[in-house]
Length: 417
Image (tube, rainbow, N blue to C red; front, side, top):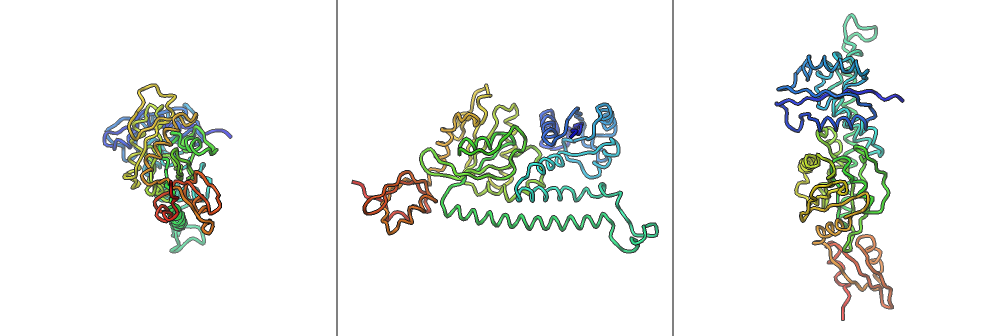
C-alpha cells in the first residue's frame, strides 16, 4: 500500500504558550509521529510570527509557500504541529488542496491503530468523537439538506439537517462510551480494593513515549511483552508481579507514554487507566537519558503527573539507556541509572524500590498449626514466602508481609531460642 506523502508545518508565535509553540525539536517529533502513523513525511515549514492568524493560522503568504511545497513534493497530506480550530482547518484544506490534520488528529490516529483491548478501543473512540464533534460542519457541508422549497422531495418541512442528525448520533455515542468507561473504572476500583486487601504495593511505570518502560518491565519481571522502537508502543495497561531485592513482592504496572501537547481528549478518555497513578504506592519515572531533549521531556511528564493528581506520590527517577549517554550520570538518592535492554543497573533499581516501599514491609518467622494450614496458602497469595518447612506439629514459614497482614499473624510468630 502506497504511503501518503506528508508536508509538515508548525508555528512559533510569541503570543502562544511556550508549551504550544513549535520549534525544531517539536517538528522532529512531529516527523516521527507522522512516520509512526504510516505517512511518509517529505518536507517541513516552520513559520515565526507574533500571533496565529485567526483565519488561516499561518497567514496567507506562508500558506501559499506551503502550497508550493506541497505541489513540488506531490504531497497528499498537510500535518500541523499545532492544534487548529475547525474553521482554520477548513480554510487550509481549501487553500492547500490536500487533507489537513493537526497534531491532535495525528496522535488520535496513532492511538486508533495501537489500541488492542476492548478498554483501549473504547478510550480511543471516545477521544475521537470528542475531537470530531466541533469539526462536523466542514466535514458534512456536502450532505446538508436544509428544509425549504429547494430541498429534495421527502426532505421538506421541519426535519433535521444531516449535520444535526450526525451531531445527535455522536452525542449519543459519546454518552454510551462514557458510561461503558465508567463501568471500567468501577471494575478497576474493585480490583484495586482487592489488591489493597491482599496487601501488595503497586509500582507504576510512567515516562515519555519510547523511554523504554515496557522493556524495563520485561527485564524486571522476566516477562516477554512485545516492545519496539516506536512512539506509543504501549496503550493498554499491563500489570505483573515483581520480586523485590530484599524479599517481598509488588505489582508493577506499565502505562501509556506521555508526549508534548498530549491531547486533552486523550487525557480525559484515558482517565480510567491513568488514575492508576494516583493509587500507586510508588512511581518509576523512566527517562531516556540518551535523548538530547531528555530534560524537557522530564518536565512534560512531571507536569502531567501533577495534572493527573499524582504529584504527591513517592517517585524514583530511572535514567534508562545509560549505555548510550556520555555525560555525567545523575546520582541522587532517588535516582537510578539503568540499561533496561541489557539489565545493567536493575539490581540497584530493585534495591531502591524495596527501600522506598520497605517502611511497610516486615520479615516474619511463623509457626502455623495444621488446623490453620489455610493461612499458608493465603501467605503464598498475599505475601512473599521465602521458605516453608513442614514439621510434626505444623508448618514453619518465613515470609515478608505488609502491615494489613502483620497484626493478624502475630499470634503465630515463632519463638526463638
